[in-house]
Amino acid sequence: MRIGVPSETGADETRVALTPSGAEELLEQGFDICVATGAGNDAGHTDEAYRTAGCEIANDRSAVFEQSDIILHVRGLAANDPDAPADPYRDGQVIIGQVGPHQLDEKLDELAERGISSFALELTPRISRAQSMDVQSSMDSLSGYRAMTIAAKELPKMIPMEMTAAGTIRPADVFVLGAGVAGLKAISTSERLGGRTRAHDIRPEVKEEVESLGAEFFAIEEEPEDVADEEGHAKEQEDDFYERQRQMLLDVVGKSDIMITTAAVPGGQAPEIISREMIERMDAGSIVVDIAAAGGGNCAPTRADETVEIDGVKVFGPTNLPATIPHTASQLFSSNLVSFLKLLAEDGDLVIDTDDEIIDATLLTHDGINREPHRDKEE
Image (cartoon, rainbow, N blue to C red; front, side, top):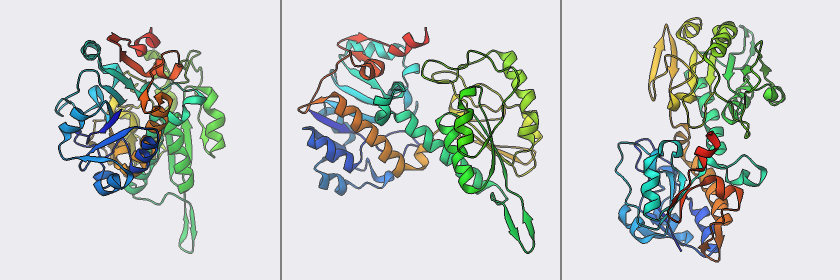
């Protein structure tokens, strides 16, 4: 079977789904690979590097779709830029990548009718056997790192404590809201930079992880009982809980030089936890990076892909932080994809075994059926 790697069409997308080293591994599995010219340029991978690995280079992006049985995407279908042109999938093709499963709706029926098998890697289950395929965790980790480095660059202060002949410089106070994969990476990055770090999450079980990184866990009174789903993701809560949470967080937010917010609900609207009033309590020059901006944001002033200034406090709303680190992001994404394809591969062909829990969780359409496994999880 032939694998196709088209160039990404999103305006801000710099990643490539498969790197030359990843391609070498798949070629050893018996696949042929066709890569669109320039697909890896932004991530530092030239056409020549792909040729050296053994790939064919297609001069026309549409030729990748015409010639390939399997299409590998960083962002395809509903995950792609809505202003980007629709991709010319062929009947019977296999699509693998981040595809925005919660926003596809009627599109899945069309894919099923055309015999297209589609995999949403965002739905990879959080089990030990699937860790090497977990694209979402890989990208979330990069988002946490990049959010903290953006804040460090924009903050008009040093982050670590310094004792000099001119006096002592106190460390920057950093507050991280949400201690999932992105939050934990933001915490560890803050600690490495020398920040005095606090973190909050509604899931009490993450307290030990936060403290193991050297940060202080900030708990609030009367935490709700039902806080996480079966995979450990934080669940959306009632409005009255968020109001209590805001009141408890007023002081810690107001005293922070940097705030990184990461609280997201998979497939849903991000909870608005940080009010404008809370941000107004921060000192001028403070920095907020809202990683949840793509889902509406955790902060009331957040605007997707914009920087808003509130009384001298800058609020950043990035929606695709991994694309700002394209080489590393592509390396991780490619590694995850290769592991996933090895699960499916057998002598250069694909065997889609729905009895496998990883395949079952990620497979949206197959054999003319709209499976929508993500809808079952929500019910």
